[in-house]
Length: 418
Image (cartoon, rainbow, N blue to C red; front, side):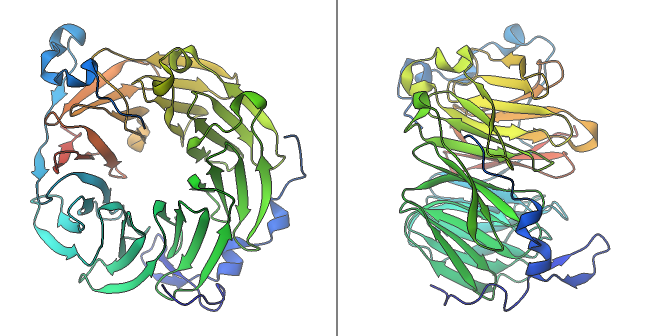
């Protein structure tokens, strides 16, 4: 593992809108924690059943969704042996894809023709996490055993690596070459890449989910016991802690998000509850306990994903049972509940908001994806892979292409512009 150093000895780099390289002082980026730390306040299951055995092709989409287009992939990347667990796309040129799989490696390839630029090798286990840095120059690949590697996108050279215990998640900072990861034993890491300066926050249990605030100065993280915390990245201390109510004690938080203003945190749990929290004053704004989720069998009540819209005061919530709910935050009401017998389970969710769109994409079991209009609550498009489960999704920042990594090892590229 890289030698821990003072995180402030060196500074990360990023590209501004003019594509000129500017050196960012991490202290300046993080600023004074007192500017945003508020006063203390109050505080995947298996689908081996008959439904899962049904093939998506058994559904008559023309009858269920008249006049709704069903798209097939414009390209399929089939370089992986075994499942393709994860996929990411560079947000600058929208041409470089990185995908990780059960074959203990990741591929970096061209989105147009699938030509492999280079292979990320040397992993000891399935590659379950990949990502491209904010300005599209670095790629990370991480495996289940805790090996993390960073590569130069331009030539495939390995620039940095670290060893941890079993990983829960890995993600880039959105403004700097800083990498975050959490492990099963409750360690939360922050590394400067490729310098290797490291900080570690030790929690009492696994940190199951996390999201960096839009200002890049804090990170919201969740525990398996339902507790949500906010960590100041400059002082490296917890500035807010949200303890669940008695009904939600010991309910694992599976997903978390922060709104575009950095004011609200949403957390979804295994029992179908979604909590909306005030990031600064430590108060719970709202608890959504929607029958759309809680009425399911106990092992299907889990909230798989919570995501705030970047352009509207809406919160999208996707459940393991295949249901999507869209909530209006100011009125604390349910705008839409979206579901269909054709869509069994939800594995991933993302917003598509480029060019004034208000769309939500869901990955399902049996090779299906659905795209819903968040304004109307109506399905807009159905995307059809082969019959294997969708395990990961990503969309280009211009909203033109969507990629789906599937259990059969194929990464499907859909041209949404068509």
